[in-house]
Image (cartoon, rainbow, N blue to C red):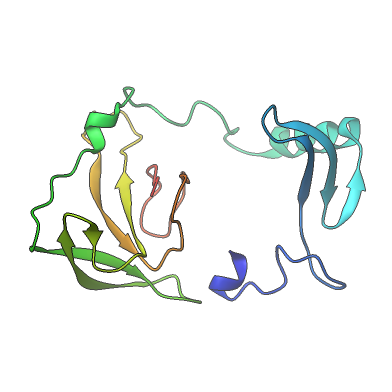
Length: 159
């Protein structure tokens, strides 16, 4: 969430705030009904023209920026021993920095319910295995998220 990092004007549906919204008529098929940019409706033709112009101005152009071999679920497998403590990267609310803490693993999972998995995938053709770990305080209890830019590196970071 933008507000978690002090960007209180972004991502909020309220007067004076800024949000880009995609309304779906069917979430399973991802059928876009309407798009709002900075809170204003925009038609698909205008959106495509503006995006094309913005991409044409970029140097280098966005695209083909990830050079890595495909990965499989086994590349992300971590083994845990019940009763053992494991290091967890702790997300700090309203900060870009992180702290470190530990969490105990049992047959039922970790002793705190906010622990999720994180991996960093090298994207520059070095053919390195994913670096996997644990993340706490992020707020992701199911699903997945991926990004290609982080404050520490520009590798792929999917928690």
